[in-house]
Length: 199
Image 1 (spheres, rainbow, N blue to C red):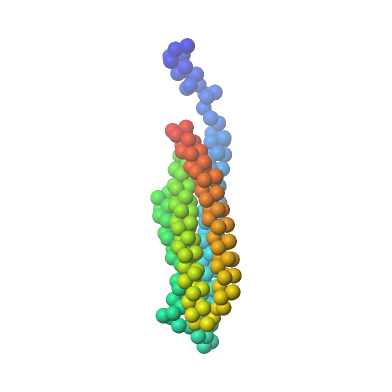
Image 2 (spheres, helix red, strand yellow):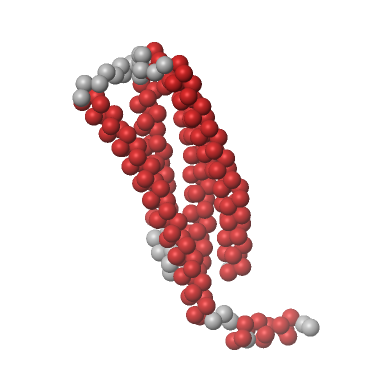
């Protein structure tokens, strides 16, 4: 069979996808992307909300006359505000992504390009999150040391705190590494393959 014999078959109406199927696939990609956006905003909002709630409790403690030495207990404040700074970076990346892909619902190609960029951002957020979690964990011994210096924590309480945070750190890093390697990397390859095939 020659190339000239294949061209009519390639251009045949039987080889053209049904417009309804194309629209259905585009709607599926757009809906999935929209869900990822909502999930990001929900989780980020929940983390910031929890941090602000704890910060509010701290402010109320100070207003009610609670003792706090800023020079000797600064690590607690840094530890408390750390998630807000990380969340601000994540939101900045999200806003930039939405500006780069304002109309991702116009075509399948646009939706796939937006999904690939969203996957890139999700992988970047996980890497930043793992670094931030490690830095926060490194700050915990400083927090416990300072609390003991000012008489707000006993040695066995500090040990318990280190164990609890240590276990939480291992679980958090393990889950994030699993999501990165088992979910986001294969998804990137799949999306890139789909975009290449669509072109």
